[in-house]
Image 1 (cartoon, rainbow, N blue to C red):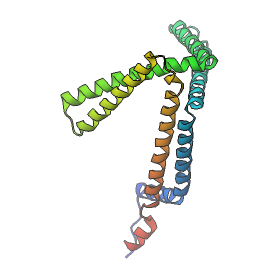
Image 2 (cartoon, rainbow, N blue to C red):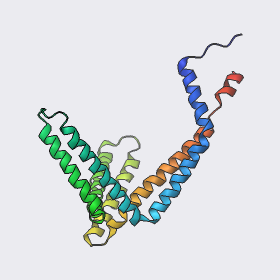
Image 3 (cartoon, one colour):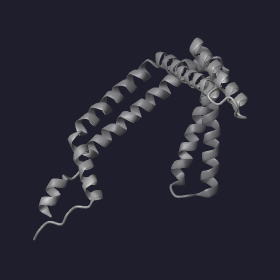
Length: 202
């Protein structure tokens, strides 16, 4: 009995599976590299903080310059003045972040603390009122966020230089978790069923 022709969608899925299985080692290498970089970032939190703030400032500065330039491409539109002012504001903020990354780190750390407190309170309130599925996990997440935000806030009020390493630790944890995700993805890709063997068995 002749084999039925494959649909384009099925063929595309099988090609993707072959590509994932053949490249799982590179995904694993990427994941391990990110884990190592994340651990190094956490271990050198102060340097990571300065680098993160400086890079953030460069991105804002570049966005501001781009917005100022594009504002003059259509000089007759009604939003020219607002777009120009916002672009100049981005440029000023970006320059301030690059020029004084340590002082900027203090402001950003305070912003992170406020975000964690507000986000934690919102998660706790929504979990207790809505009681959706797995609301307990969201409640735990809210409690942890709230506690972490309060800890950062209290330490900053005590004039401790917590802002010198908080951002670096957060960036390091993010890189570390991203690496762990890539490692898990690589293992999953390696264990995908081979479409060629499946077709032969079928």
